[in-house]
Length: 168
Image (cartoon, rainbow, N blue to C red; front, side, top):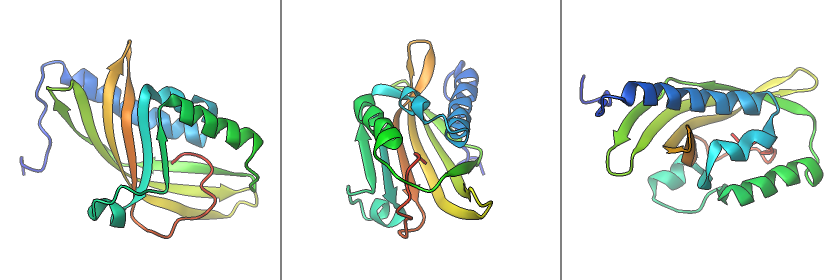
């Protein structure tokens, strides 16, 4: 059993793990609450956000559905959300499982994996399972708080709805 559970390797890691779990939860809450303008601030200045499928991830293929490198690209995506994208009004509800985490002493980063499901709620009230998969996160301290250095969203299905407007 102990080989399955990630071990904490630093005396201060309990606080860091709790803070990392709070970052993961706050991200989902912000997207669910329509606070997309906050999205880039969850990442380090050179942070990476990448959406791919399990099929591509397993095959080691670098091609994905979306890739943003750095806050600048994320800010552009937010601007497009407000000005260029046309879509039916809807909202999301992220259901995120408890993350498993480990600490990389060499980089000072927390490595986390969380399973997720995202339900899309249309203005009519209809709800659909929009996406399911896992988050693979590299989290590091920037200033006084933890940020995503990398967030890879691995979708279980290669059938992706074209209405991928709000970050997963």
